Image (tube, rainbow, N blue to C red; front, top):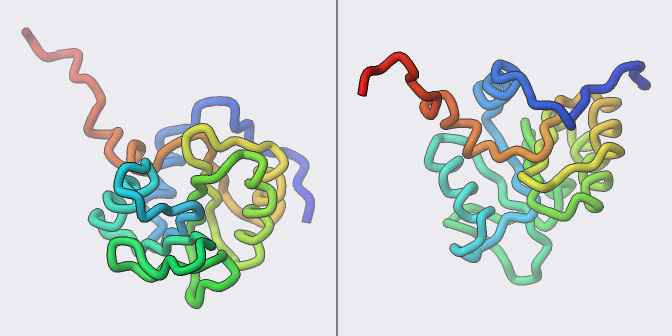
Amino acid sequence: MSRTAYMDHSKPYDDAYLQDILKSVKTIAMVGASPDKTKFSYGVLRVLHETGYDMIPVNPRPGLEEIRGIKVYPSLNSIDRPVDMVEVFRRSEDLPDIARDAVAIGAKILWGQIGVVNAEAARIAEDGGMKVVMDRCPKIELFRPFWKPKLNLGI
């Protein structure tokens, strides 16, 4: 299924686009989730889980069975339930293969973390009927509406 127009992921995303995604998803598979509490992916996993998302850590490391008490899966293809969004904490060059796997498991959104951008992966995901976000953090976007400055307040 080929599309004629692709979203330009180098431009800022519309706030409504991001908010709609974050309101609609319930299950998030995090590719590149880490058990290391000093890693950014651990903090994002923690906040999203505590916010109420059903988090599915994905990490192929042998012997890694859980992160924060949540079962870890070695790959997207090994997950045993539907996934709404695939969030990626991996190198940009890994994204096309992850996009193919995300399409194969029927995920609705491919989300590349800050610094994770790949045009080929965006095309693969969009051709597979997915929405795509790149170079953004869902944890930050989730709370962004509360950060807007109130310019009309007096000092």
